[in-house]
Image 1: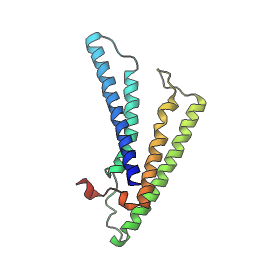
Image 2 (image 1 turned 90 degrees about the vertical axis):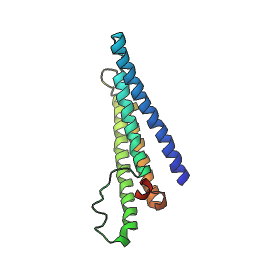
Image 3 (image 1 turned 90 degrees about the horizontal axis):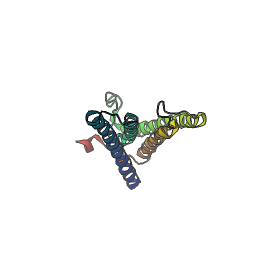
Image 4 (image 1 turned 180 degrees about the vertical axis):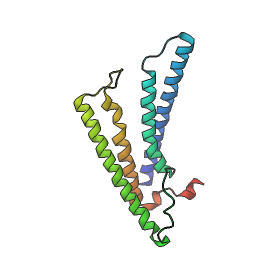
Length: 162
């Protein structure tokens, strides 16, 4: 299971990095075209925008995998220390369920965009294609949290970050 999560992290990190490269190339190419050739590259800002959204959604899982996501720490010492392991597992199950719910809702959004035939304004690209990153990212994160609940040793600790 640890190897699977490591491969998932590498897969998502690779695609997030590629998406950011596309953002940089699209924006740089548009700036160069404007400054040196007095023209604008058609749709480059839309390409950069959707690539940034894609990378950001993948970043959600990357943050969870590395333990760098934001979490409330003020509650850490409210309950007895002996309960911490159980509470962390419970938190991961709850987080997994919330991410599954978000995945389901976003899947329904993608499905309805596909059925209705929504298009990206100005460029007339099918919107559902770009939205598919949302259910993937939410379900991927749910899988991680459920994995952490089943095998707490998979979960990164704050000591790992220091």
